[in-house]
Length: 379
Image 1 (cartoon, rainbow, N blue to C red):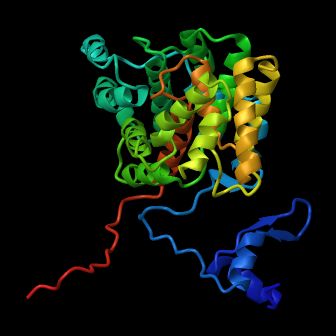
Image 2: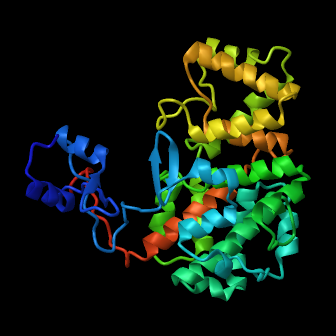
Image 3: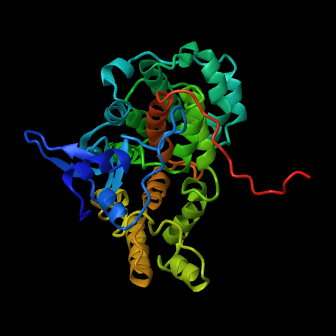
């Protein structure tokens, strides 16, 4: 494909960033097709990483047509049997037993009053407001060794789970059990909560992850890294920032006599139909497919779910679009009785943000990135 000699190919691996992997038991290597096709097509090599700068290479997650792969393992397959704690240990490269201990983080003395004042806020807003105070109450958060960041990461996840179910304190129980108990969910729904959080853990360099890596490079704790990810992900142009609009659509589908009416009306008026289509997956998001398939098994005779299926079928027939992962997330949150401002997604995604903050911090110090000024020149 490249029409070059073997020595030149080996040079390309280092100079033009062609990724390769040794084949065990042989002297041969496999090369990443996308990298080869980029060079054949005249594409530029990825920008070189600047020592100490924001790292643009990662070995955490690879996104393919089959969905995300966490350190080489399919997230969809992991979600079938593995716990959130298992996946966190995998992404953080830690021993699960050494970080997910029974030790719980300290709570600020003012926390009960703060929670009372924030009772109407979303879980994300409570975390954004309270994490700085919780950080101060837990001096071990300032240990930025890999082990220290992993242990603080566990504290962050347990607090987020508590905020999702409006609990006054975190629990050392498995995260999906804490959430399921707080929401009064059935055993089957508890398993689905686990699956969704595993599938939410990471999805490459989306905006929240870029922001997390930028602040992590300066040496903040995982509390501040996750706080940053939550803040960025609330933007109106992000999937999470549009959850309330999607929740309204799903409520209309559920309460309409004809479930297709809300989506048909939006199509007729030229509105975007939230919860459908993906720029990354040509054949639909495998994560959404996995969750909706499991829901169909649990809710096979459920009238509300049949209405959702009818609406999905109409959108597919009219526009050729498949449901995205946000739709599966928001529908499950609605069935669990969660507030429309909340989602299991933020708890799952925090696992990945912590992994990225660890990876980025270990690169080294920060470098001021050069800017290209385009304004008026000084007189």
